[in-house]
Amino acid sequence: MNTELKLQALVDGELDAREVREVEALLAQDAQSAALMQELKWTKGALVGNDAELALPETREFFWSKIERTIAIEEKKAAATAPAERSWWLKLLYPATGLAAMVAVMFVVSGGRSTDGADSESVPEDVNAVSFRSESEQMSVVYVADENGNFSPVSEEVKNAPEADK
Amino acid sequence: MPQPIDHKTALDVQLVAASQAGDMLAFEELVARHRDKIYARAFSMMRNEEEAIDLAQEAWVKAWQRLKQFQGDSSFATWMTRIVINLCLDQLRRQKRTRAESIEQLDEELGGVERQMPVVATNPSEGLERSELRKRIDKAMNQLSYEHRTVLILHEFEEMEYKQIAKVMNCSIGTVMSRLFYARRRLASLLQSLKKEQQS
Image (cartoon, rainbow over all chains, first blue to last red; front, side, top):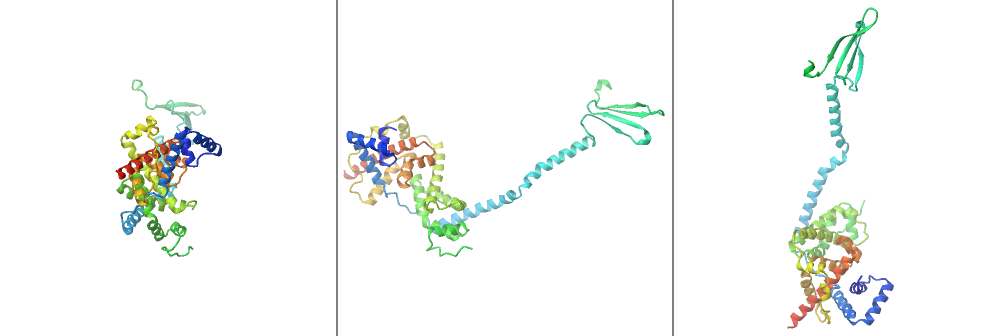
């Protein structure tokens, strides 16, 4: 802090005891600082209690009516947004509905089957056959048992085979 | 159940408590009591009647909305004045972004203008009637930049300490001190000039 700002801080009572002693010692020796100090004190003194006194140039009724109307508008706005805040769970409804719809679509597209790779399923018992399907290989194979109980593939279906292979 | 109060004779604290409980008439009475002071502070900072009226109105609406936050740590008038000061500062910052810096401010930033001013050797307010002194102070304040005027208002009229001013003006304590110093020196010089004008 430079000397001038220290002088000001002294006028404003913003210095600690040690700093006050230092600045007072300076003032005792330096006439220019003392003159500046005097000017700062005069300016401060001139302002004390001399804040401009002004009256609002509108009648009490008119000014209040504007405030009252604005408050009413703001409260209406707040009330309109308040129900959404109360039913916070509604905010979760939209993503949850979207997620459910997505799962349903995937279920329909996959025909209700698992899509995690190969799986097998049994056909009715009286046929004595087993089917195998591989999503990764995009193929299905049906094995039918002969009279000795030996299974052999009887049909093979390859989905989305490249054109050249057809 | 709060006791019914006579709004005209009730103390501010009673009116505040009633307002906090939703009594609009109590709040209207508070507005009526303090509206001039709030407007005067807005005008002293903005130097524009229309803006000052709008900001004073906005301050009262904000006060109603935040009334529950008022704990009574200061007087209601002080709390209200802080609200309007903050609104004025926001507005002045917005305006500053859209206007060029004044030569005076640039000079100040380059440094040392206030140091080149001759020291005022006689009390520029001596022998003046209070009303005349107020008029001159107001005239001189009008010639200061908003940053300098604001630090003077906050320090001398609102009796805020350097650190409080730094907080509301969003600047360092050093900047507050330097602005305050410049503002005072400039004000002394302006008051001196006004005195000389009067004498000649």
